Amino acid sequence: MSWIEILMLIIAGLLVGFINTLAGGGSIISLSLLMFMGLPSQVANGTNRIAITLQTLTASLNFKKAGLLSSRKGILLGIPAVIGSIVGSYIAIDINEELFEKLVVGIMFVMLIFIFYSPTIWLKGREDLLKKKAGWIQYLIFFAIGIYGGFIHAGIGYVLLIALVLGSGFNLLEANALKVLIVFMYVPFSLLVYVISGDVKYSYGFIMAIGNIAGAFIASKFAIERGANFVRYVILIVVIFTALHVFNIIDIHSYYQRILE
Image (cartoon, rainbow, N blue to C red; front, top):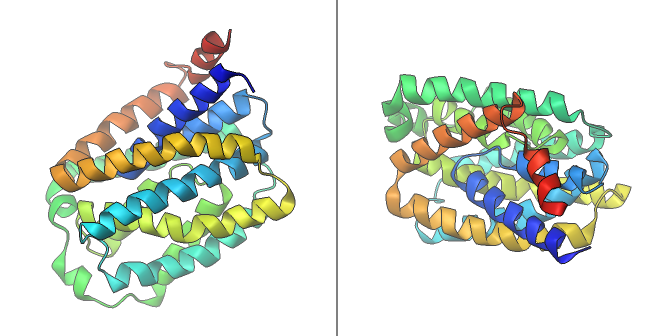
């Protein structure tokens, strides 16, 4: 591995850690880079989870310190997501890069409509929903979300935010912190599935994790200090950028090629 490749992995990790902590969909960057560097899609998917595990641990510790992870309800909802992620990881034998990128953009645009059509729900949450105990339908939803996370992972942050805000009543800042914690709860289990199947490139994963940890630390501090409205506008920027990439207006792969040349 050349020093340019090492630097690219760290920079990509920094971007992914920052984007995933404040919004979601950042794994498109890391997965694209890993596959561009020659890893099969399933190996890229498994390798990426090393960095995601350490990234979400870092952000979760910062959010816990700020008092944003005190909800028992949110943690309970993470349990079926963990179980679902194991199921999803076992069926993730292969992925179609173009298909999952378009799926991620679709989810992001749905969220974008909600977040700007009715911003007060996202910024303030819903106290009536928040006080209700989680029912079997919510647990089933989070189980399904876990399957998606174990299978693809890219874009999981948006799915979790929709479920936590619109389905459970958390405001955007609290939901963002819980989103990170739930991902941290399930990713090590799905990573283990990839480790057992031999679909993890450890050197790439741990080098990228250096950037992911730094990005997550910076982003969680920004979220804590600047609040839900700041998170909302970061989501807008990320959605626009991801859409430009998926519809070939911006080609991430060509940038990687130019740098390596």
